[in-house]
Amino acid sequence: MNSDNLPYPYGSPAIAGTIKSRAEDFRVDEELGFEPTGEGEHLLLQIEKRGLSTPELVSRLSADYGLHPRQIGFSGLKDKNALTTQWLSLHLPGKQEPAARRPPEGYRVLRASRHRAKLHRGTHKANLFQVRIRAVTELPDNTLQQLAGLAEHGMANYFGAQRFGRRGDNVEQALERLAGPRLKRQQQSLLISALRSELFNQVLAERIRMDFWRRPLDGDVFMLRGSRSIFSEPPDAALLRRFDSLDISSTASLYGSGRSLLGADALALERRVQAANPEIVACLERQRTSLQMRPLRVPVEALEYRLDSRDQVLELRARLPAGSYLTSLLGHFVSTTP
Image 1 (cartoon, helix red, strand yellow):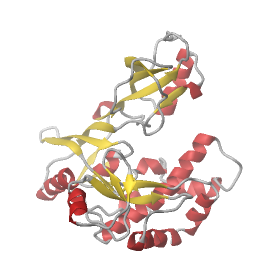
Image 2 (cartoon, helix red, strand yellow):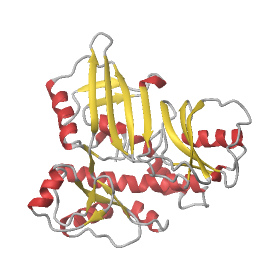
Image 3 (cartoon, one colour):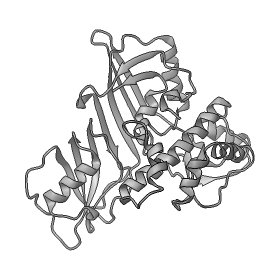
Image 4 (tube, one colour):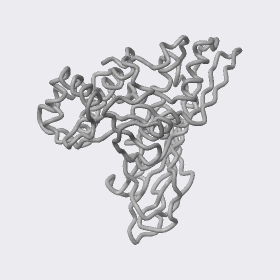
């Protein structure tokens, strides 16, 4: 499925603009959601970077501090063509804080503190985005209504286009390459993620078409906001109030082995999508991935925007839960080009 053709719950965008014209136009600040303990075998570093992907940053830190990449942990992948801050951990059992072997290039350390545990993927709570969208001349009523809908009802939690590669062909590559010789772990994980993301996006798109995005579907599994714990129970008045307030959300599967808690219409919908994608399902069956659940919608917190009509720049600020994509948020109200 082409990410440009995904349906959005508040209608098609009425405006267009350009993002990432400059690194400063796209800022991401990772929010851990907890404070380092101040002691332990790991040194947490808050790092500001530009012009580096997270794997490239790990390689730089490995060389600069004389550590094996496996001794370096991180929670989230951050954009290369942006100004970003994120946390990484250095495993230093019984060692003093090391001095860098050479001056940092492309990054700077903002804060350092000891912690008891290594950072793993998905550890952080949220990302704060500040973005400038250029070549925007006006905010028509349709756009204002879409922005109001995002603030009140949240966003459709699609995987962003970057999940599918620069050319958008990661699904095709996965089907071809995962059937061949064993790949490096990171590359294999990237391709498997693209397949699971494709199935999820198709389920979410169908839910929006059926008008079962802002209301539960019979047989849904729900995820609690913040804790990410899941549960399944028949909807009653109290559950529907929690659903309307974004305290809970319906979920869909990230394909893998394990018993699904979905039932009735929700399960039937997923099976229809899987039946329509037999090559993806067969490929994932061979990979031995574990079933996970992902919320179909997420809240958009701290949403603020301002249009500079003279310079034709729309400034947007929003906080999204870890794992959600700003590009997917933008797709709700603006067509963008890099």
